[in-house]
Image (tube, rainbow, N blue to C red; front, side, top):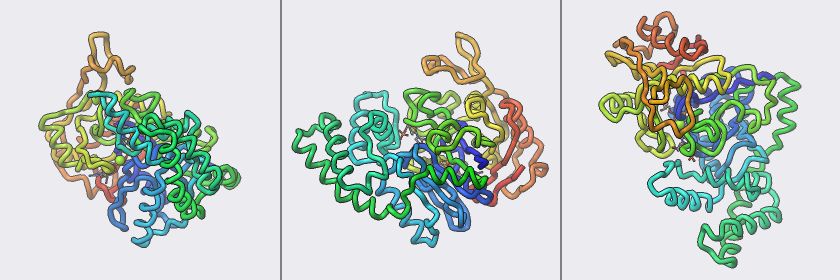
Length: 422
Ligand code: GDP
Ligand code: IMO
Ligand code: MG
């Protein structure tokens, strides 16, 4: 087995979906290893434009097995809707598999999440509202329901009683109401289990087969390092590990089978949701990037916060992920700019930072920029690195120099074909 892990190196929405769809031409399986329907991975190919939330981005490649791995949290209604949508457009989901150990996202998690955000009183995380935090919290507290449990009515019945017992106070229910509400979900969950049964698998024998057959795997990360539960801008993070280590625990991949880690870098910065974004520009530059890049959330439609490329974040991501190749996306969005800026370190009264410090330092950070000339020429039809304008190559070179990681791919448009393979 040789696994390539594709990870986000910023605040998410780097273009991972596009990169995975492109690279999947040479993969036998694509595995999502963390996150849930908070993901919005956009893919533009000959099947049109798709925003995938749960389905791994290899689904457009016939014959590629697409596993929603053990480390994910799955809203079954959302998954079934996505599967039906794909099938109704002639895209087969026969290659889809769901780990029997993946966690199920349940309706009360969405209510709890709303209450938790209210509790923060002004310090909201601005989550995607998909129940992700409560789903992982419930899993860690060992009150969760695994996808395999959907196939066993008596386990499910007991699990719902326990779960609603646990959240009773949060939901403002007395014991009898809690039991009633829990059991009211039973029918829907059993139905979802029946519909998903053909796809639910034990991933361990799959992993054994991958190892035995030297299968080419792509591991698709969700979000980016700055929203990693442990390494990101806590508490403005998601509740799982989008960094490459998450591929081992969440995907069931032994670490020594990871042969490559590709870091996806958007050519500038965007973020949705709250929390520090040192290079955010609330003026004309941010506005121009948002309009040219179409920077509106793929899951919630929220306008993304935009700014110049932050290489401190990308450098940090490369370090933590062991990144050995960069996939730089959305270079074309910068085509018309006269001058570009890139943040190469942060300055604060305490000193300078080359890597992202712990969150308590964030209020005092100022980005230190270098300026580069723009290229002011369209790049979308370019397919060879050497054909890019010299200024664009200099921009890419700066990113590689500052991170110490070579270029693997450059994306110059949303469609699968708008790609420069290095
Ligand atoms: P992901 O969550 O990392 O998969 O990224 P998103 O899909 O949320 O956001 C990336 C957006 O940029 C999507 O709308 C893509 O279609 C688009 N996109 C990806 N690569 C390129 C590119 O090279 N150029 C342009 N203009 N758009 C791109
Ligand atoms: P993809 O995979 C961008 C952000 C939310 C919020 C924080 C926590 O498309 O890159 P959560 O719902 O996970 O509890 O929210 O993380 N966030 C994303 N931002 N792209 C995503 O996914 C995101 N998934 C979550 O806005 O700040
Ligand atoms: Mg996205």
